[in-house]
Amino acid sequence: MTTEPTADEAARVRLWHRVSQFLFTEARLLDEWRLLEWYEEMLTDDIRYSVPATDVRGEPADALGLIDDDAARLRQRIGQLLNGEVWCENPRSRTNRMIGNVEILADRGTHLEVAANVVVHRFGQGRSDAYVGKCRWELVVEGESFRARRRVVVLDHETLYEHGKLSIIL
Amino acid sequence: MTTGLQRPAGDPIVVDDPGRLTFRVDRRAYTDDDLAAQEMTRIFDRCWLYVGHESEVPGPGCYVARDVGGRPVVMARGSDGVIRVFANSCTHRGALICSQPAGQARSFRCPYHDWTFSNQGELVGVPIPDGYGPGFRKADFGLARHRSDSYRGFVFVTFDPQQPRTLTEYLAGATEYLDLIDDQSEAGMEVIRGAQLHGARANWKLMMENSVDIYHFRALHKRYVGYMESLGSVPPRRRGGFGRALGLGHAANELPPAAARPLAHWTPMFGAEFRPRIEATAARFAERFGAERAERITRTNRALLIFPNLMIIDAIAITIRKIDPAGAGRMAITSVALAPKDEDPDIRELRKSHYLTFLGPAGFATPDDIEIVESCQRGCLNRTVRYSDLSRGMNKEVPETTDELPAREFWRQWDRLMQGDGGRFEVPHRAAGTPAGIPAGTPGAEAR
Image 1: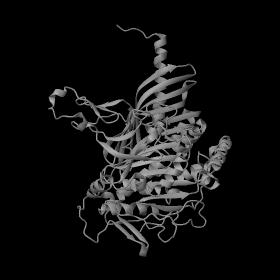
Image 2: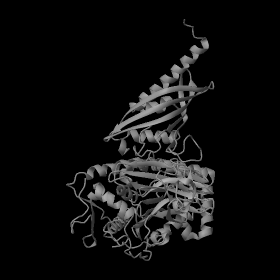
Image 3: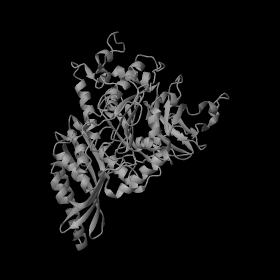
Image 4: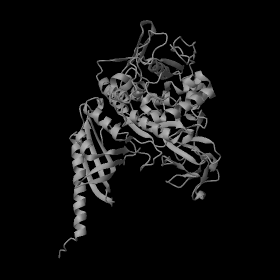
């Protein structure tokens, strides 16, 4: 026996689908080094991108992290990555972002709280590293699509001893 | 790669020839597994080694567990308020008695058989004690306590029961620089929560050299220079300042700031809104310490190398960087930020923000440092090119910060210890007069 989805359920599935598509597009642009497009088309002007330290989980405001970029610094980071000034990303590393467990934690009308698990594989300079973490987005609703206003990647690694550095955008 | 423990006489690793103004290091020092193993016994088992900062164990029962010199240790503040450093190993069968990196506890319980130790190290609990004979005394099985001491809040440990020097004697001229750092707050300095734990696939000594090398700044860190320029602070091409020998392998670079300093040196990169507060702090320091010393504390950058594996860099922020070997070709790096305990919350945010811009595994500079030392490690595997050169500045009475004096001081002490003099050989720490044109500080001569 099959039951027709209610209108409510169908709307939730459509929203989840649109959110997933947004996250997949973001992952693809980052993998393809289309960083400016990502910055200009998928983020708000007051974007905050952060990666907390691996020994302090979550986002305690008083702690030092690994990355805490506002729009200006993220724009700088992108400019440096693209113009070849970042020695360790020249030649550019190859990356592959896998996104799973996409959940809409809260729908606040004007914006959504979204969570997903991410694995970013990075290859370059003879190295092969995987960054594993939980990503949280605050997505501002913009018509049928979104822009990210907050993007936090909480790494699951105890340390980055194996990786040494985090020179790409997760 | 292995070359054997015994090198023939006349085949030195460190070739120090002041007459010819040459200083070379045989690249086996970075790649040889036997040398790496020898370093653990001849250097890390003998020297005073940095463990952590007192602020990391602020109250009774607070502890941190970490590796120091290849050994797992616990630094704990006992219920009596005393900071002790213990072997993190149960006296029964060897398991770690503390597997949390940090916390607060009245006691440590070994998970294997529930032997329990107080935070002062005494064995206080043994299940089913009637399994032992009448000669068994708990007092004989307390945690092994290492000899530790602190200077201005920096806690060090030594694993050498015969270490002849007190910590202060060991630190030699480095105490002057630790004073300049700890004097930055009357309330005391503290480590900010959140450690940057990373590493590199390279020999640890390459990172020590990199950490005191200012010659590479404009070349390798073009991206950071560009970032500073975009914020209105243009670093000069010649950085000025001087390198200074501090005795026993310790050394420092001291130089005018290229950028701002969150304590009390404002430049446009910090934004106009911070200017009054930062200048008010500068005025307070001038009142407290007098103009000259205040200037040195607040408006001078320094990079301090404490032999063998501690770097404290006091510039756009203060970082404490502990660099631990993990065999010839790997290292672990622990970096934390140090700041005044009583810092204005807005300035603290500014400090953290600028710390992250430059430093750490995702900053605008450190990732390139990691990549370059890994590149050196790979390049050194081509054994045809036998030596690295560290002779810059040997032709000068006072080497500049773009010279290589601190690295030479490091290597000279490394060589003495590896030759087996055990660090007992006295290296005179000579404080020369202040040369003209150097605003503050007294460069020590190279210990040759």
